[in-house]
Image (cartoon, rainbow, N blue to C red; front, side, top):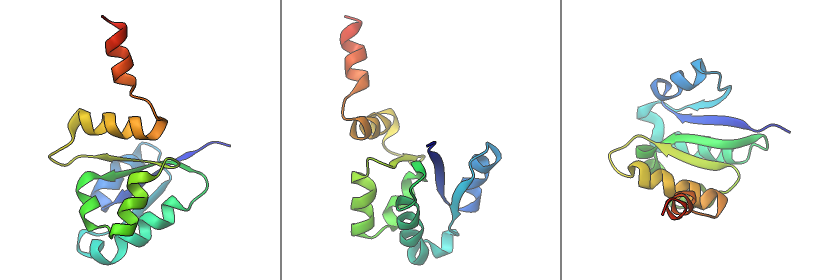
Length: 113
């Protein structure tokens, strides 16, 4: 069974992914994030055929504690956050490490020495 990529966020955030062929998305207008983002994220996390969830890093601030913990500990689907001022490559590194259980970059660094 193939796994889908899902994108959650404002229409401006999801549009590029939709144009690239992502079929699973939840648009949540900026002014409604406080009320609707938890439900959108929970819905996608409970969707069986979703393997990767993409969100803007700043949207994590709108999530309730319970949903944020679900996002941070979810292995399948793996939640990847992009954008925002912090994190950078180290944030992505931690997300990959959490998702697969090993630090790929650490192994690569050791192999080059």
